[in-house]
Length: 207
Ligand SMILES: [Zn+2]
Ligand SMILES: [Zn+2]
Image (cartoon, rainbow, N blue to C red; front, top):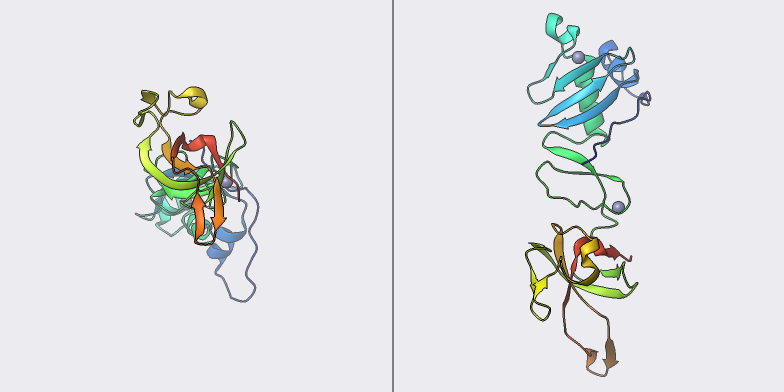
């Protein structure tokens, strides 16, 4: 699982409001924030010191907080990064989208693979089978894993079937149909209603 550190670049300063000196430094000083999970953040300061911020209890390991008991610039910076969507809030992590690598903020216990909104698939979406290039329509995204669902006709699991062994066995199973349908006067009539099952990672959102 890959986490993202926000870049050590200074942030833009809002000019419309007055900010106290500590708030100003919290916003403008180069710091990088790395979410560690459990509401903990590692903050690396411009002077290359690394401090640990526990956001929920409002604690930091820096001298300003430990000896002077102030809400230091590191705690403030973590809060700013979260408010502005660059770092995940407590209880969530930034995980890379399986297909494009963009960071996605998800619950810490969310099972992988994780997808961004562009690569997520829902019933009705068109997907491409990475093995054949065929386009299919998704009918169901299951919670069951590919190594836990049996294909009756083949007497093996979805994970074991054919070329599926190239894909992770612990990913959810997706049911999809081939769009072999013809349009009649009474609507769309599918020629075949067989639902084929695929490991989630074999299918790619086509939209
Ligand atoms: Zn601090
Ligand atoms: Zn993506």
